Image (cartoon, rainbow, N blue to C red; front, top):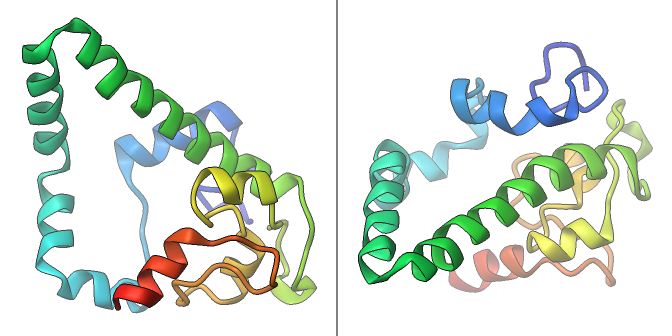
Length: 152
């Protein structure tokens, strides 16, 4: 949570958080992405992100307008809102703190955690950035972390 952090709601206007990262990307420390870079499927989806979206949206459109709207645009808008506002803003401004030594404004937000399968526990993530399991307390539901652990 500094002026150089593209995800900080304290230094970036909330409506710009998602669009700035989507359009320009941001630098990620390689040490946190080594395993992802070894996975050919993840590398392929990263490389062809927009192509995959265009092909999927085209297939939905071929099935009919309602498929395009409710199969692509509505889920995309909900996902963008929840990840852009929920994770970046709500999980840095509202919630509780497990680790006060992170020296930032990150917080754990139960509601965001439930909506985005564990990504709402930003204070835990800032304390242990290389850990795929975001939950650290018994009541923090992290379904994505559970899946990573189960199928690792």
